Amino acid sequence: MKEYQVSGELMKGFIGNIAYEVVLPVDMDQITVEVSFEKRIMEEITQEDREACIKAYRKNVGTNPEENEIIRMINGEKTEINVSVFHNEAYLGCAHRDEMTKKIVISPEKASKGFRTWKFHGGVLKVVLHVYQVLNQNTPYQVVIKREEKL
Image (cartoon, rainbow, N blue to C red; front, side, top):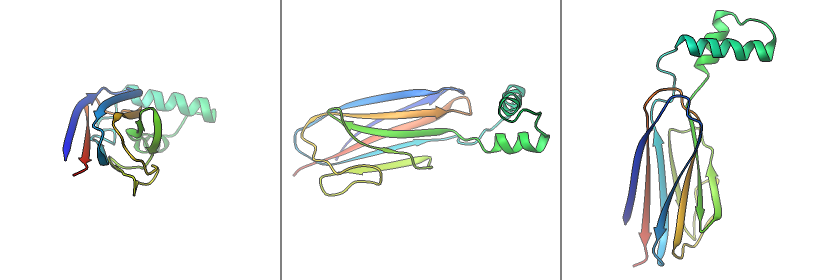
């Protein structure tokens, strides 16, 4: 089994996509992609966070929130990263699961929930991280791609 691993840190407030591409050999049995991150819940509530919450509440509800509503809203937030996988630009699926570690297995015989079975025949595997919200500064993440080659 061959393995490709990359890691990084995301800044607070980052929203966007991060793509990784790996060249695959011709004879493949299975691909496993594992994406994990830390710091899901807000570690420190700043005055700026409180003000953003109050502003959003006023805009959507039309009144000022009470303190317990501010706390409820802030505690309901979480860092969110989803994962899509492509092979030679063919879409294989997306993991929207509410997990800090997403493990995706794709082969001709089986595939994780949200993905399709697929026969890999060389080319380029692309893994895209869809980062919707990062609540904490220096939020670490890691991507591990494992490939099982035919014997």
